[in-house]
Image 1 (cartoon, helix red, strand yellow):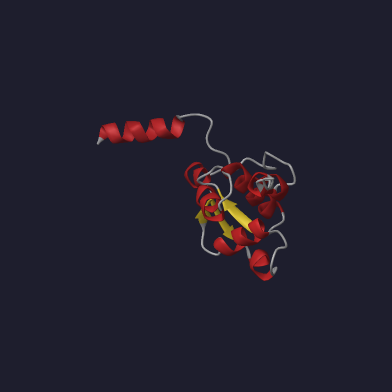
Image 2 (cartoon, helix red, strand yellow; image 1 turned 45 degrees about the vertical axis):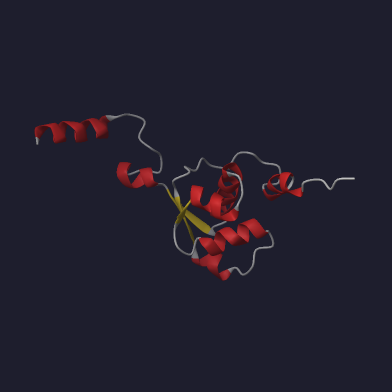
Length: 120
């Protein structure tokens, strides 16, 4: 009799069955633990605890998934949960460039950069 592969069940349990984060988070977004996350103590869920410990220095969501050895979708759900609870901060790399939390929907900034480069 073979033993079931518990690795297939674990990601489902870690996200409580959810497959989508509460908010869209880019895989290149940088995640850092907040003071509340640092002072919280050990999280009872091992993946969340590991993310909080890893993110004392900013890390991308893709890097977190790799280091925690969890699928990228699971990492995105967990990071979104930690941010919603105030335990982690997510810095969207597009926000610094566009001045908003959402990537620009048009190409106007890139077109101005292109035009400026052509003038050089």
